[in-house]
Length: 314
Image: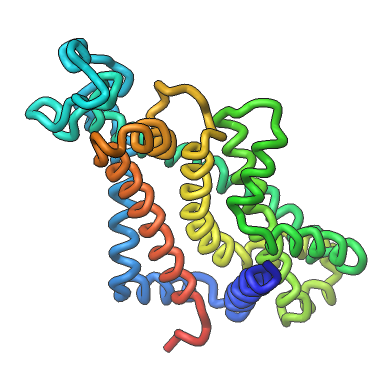
């Protein structure tokens, strides 16, 4: 666990230094965007992410049926060994309750986007707050906060999320969201703190202090804006982890117990696992969707990280 935590911290510190190394403003953003357009990995990642977001947003228009609608003709003679497969009206077949599986997969994208966005935003907000406090005040405040984040970074994110959900009084969608969000807090906190420390002795910060600008204004107007690039990059990478962790919690039965909710992890755990020998595709489809979407965000995030790295600038 110690090696895992050290690797996480090293990557975050490297990203923080990269974001603070250049204050090129608009030119820096344009330079990074130019490199992204030329990077095939970034293009593939952006295409996957873009398609996923479009499907999630327009799910009611794309899905052929209501995801909770049960079709009696599919369940009339239903047995464990005769779950309806693909047909003209139901391209991916149905689940054991006679609901269109394609429609549930499409609405599952919306559910995944909802959980991922909220978990990432909550983790980002808390992490930025903690990182800003640690970087601005330093001293014992910095030591205490960073030791706490080091402990959390040393643990696998899924194990920590499982522990947090288990501590809750009951399982729900919001329990999963907050558990996944808390797991990402130390990542954003350490990233922002590292970026702010790298800027404390920079020319623009020293000049602001010499002019008598208050420390609070220096943090809000100079340090935080210059750290946004790294935070956005890390948010993209964190989104991929959030998707995987949330799906894993649902698969393990620690998520929302509502079987009517179209959620990929729940579909994988309830239908895919229970009826794997009869209809293995009930597990293949949601598993493939989770992997592809997480891969898309990872590819895009890594490409963005390379684009802002000063070592890759020409």
